[in-house]
Length: 136
Length: 136
DNA sequence: CTTTTACTGCAACTCGATTGCAAAGATTAC
DNA sequence: GTAATCTTTGCAATCGAGTTGCAGTAAAAG
Ligand SMILES: [Mn+2]
Ligand SMILES: [Mn+2]
Ligand SMILES: [Zn+2]
Ligand SMILES: [Zn+2]
Image (cartoon, rainbow over all chains, first blue to last red; front, side, top):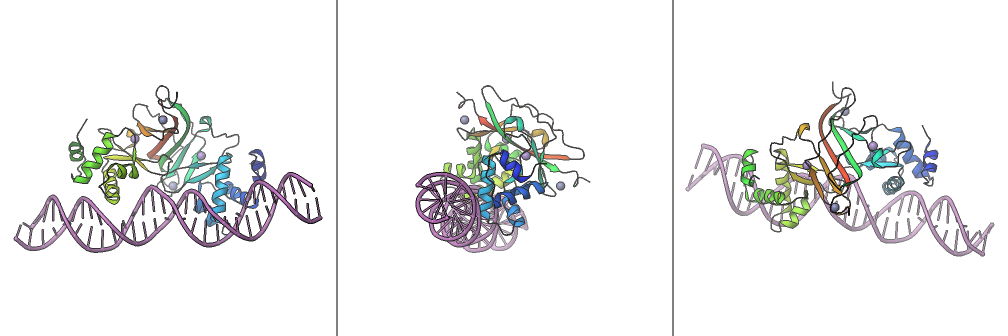
């Protein structure tokens, strides 16, 4: 696993106190985090600073965002080598029982056959159901 | 194509003036509509009435909602026979140029292989890119 | 016809997201 | 080094999609 500093260096994002702590928090969580999740976890960092940090991270492909239908955008750290291209597409799973959203990096995404002349750029694929923990 | 009255009868939703006009509007549009889209199109119908109508429609599977990442939930009429089960899953396409979101009823959704012990209930699959009109 | 239930319109409100601005910090120019 | 410049941060205010309380109207039941 890379450190925060290494990731930011690779993605050419200047390292600051807020950025380090936000990225560290994201790396420490297995579920994708909302702005509020991060705000709650980092009690002394201002919401708008976290917000702008997330925008910077997203622009520079440090993280990607997930619209899981919960009303709050979630964020997850990109996998190593991710360029947020169609090739980096993966499903996200939203557990309707425990409200956990996370990347399914291990589930292959089948080729999407778009109609004639459509161009694929990105996708937001959220699969909903019960996670293994809740499906007992 | 079924009329509004037929659809509401099949889905066991009582027919009212607002419901008829909202459903008629949805049927007349090829792109999925946001609450604001509908509000703008139906100048004399109140937003909260439209909102509650959409909730009623969604609960009764007259329509389904799409989170396309634009910040506004979009709504589209369900296909005939749709029960909003995993079998009725389909991709949605969001054109990053013309901002049009619509159902790709004709693109087959491949089987989603979830990890061991996960249970699929629903999905929100939004593919983004250029539509045929904008990809020229 | 009267009572009960459902629907509608209006206004107020919630809450996640976003922005303006000034202070603090970092970088570059001299 | 210091001064000028650019970037980041914190705070407060604002935006806007979504949601709700409530009273009036319409429809259904008795
Ligand atoms: Mn992901
Ligand atoms: Mn659809
Ligand atoms: Zn779960
Ligand atoms: Zn288009």
